[in-house]
Image (tube, rainbow, N blue to C red):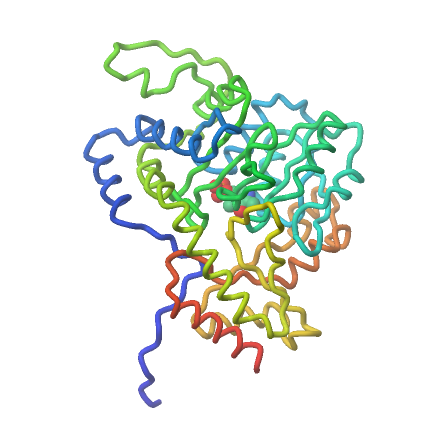
Length: 390
Ligand SMILES: *Cc1c(COP(=O)(O)O)cnc(C)c1O
């Protein structure tokens, strides 16, 4: 074999943008000796509440969005066995959190263009046992919150927003996570603000958030930071059988500086988004629908539809060829109903939610991270063209 030219390094699908500020903060946190829930979590919570503004007066940091969704539903005291309507086009954690809260997930199909839960499908899925709606602002595009909130008011339902993609998302002047009773955010490594693992619950009702916070730390009445502070020993009381879901200062140390750069990251992803729009517009694939007027898209995922009849290649072959060219991709998501666990437990069949099924079988997410240089974006575009040309 002839020696080949040095290959460009593999382009990771969602590379986190870690900078010196968070590295120094993690070091300072370690040197302080306080790694667990403490002053840095309190600061991160205050900063996040300030970013979200008036709709999110009360917040609680936790160790994942999955934990936020679960503990939020437990705190809301939804009667076991009640139904929660959500989208089939989501990460499994959305549905698992409903099950962990002893509730019953009911899927409502998505709109084929926006890929968000369809309000008409929500209405059609309501039964006397429905107690909550859990919309997911898919890819960072806000759901139709006017209609969803109207449905919730009419049927007296709770609304718990899965905002894992939607830190920067706004809809008609209000921020994602502030429409419903609870908004749940993720700081997982691929998300727009990261802490490694981490999550946040926001809400308007101080008692609901206080209960969620208590449940996230064993159901104890005072957190360790207060117990072991310099104001003297204080006994704690276990008020409920809670969970181990608290956020650590080590995580918040990363999040503080990530959050400070959230708008910078958003600007960069928006620029990459429009580079993709321009470069891929003529190709035989469907690009994401443009953001709607009077909304703010969080530009979390850039998803293209690879339909075999049009593209001449099926989605899985597309993924393989991108990979061979050194470009990492993602799939967001196979419909929840494709997974064996839910099929077996609930008898679900993907055909019941045809829009989510089709999207799940055709969608590809291209790299979209503020870490990407213009040359990286050009490489992705070339790989897409090459893949479709063959
Ligand atoms: C990532 C994600 C979650 C779970 O977030 P974690 O912080 O990893 O628990 C939930 N829902 C959606 C839509 C997600 O993308």
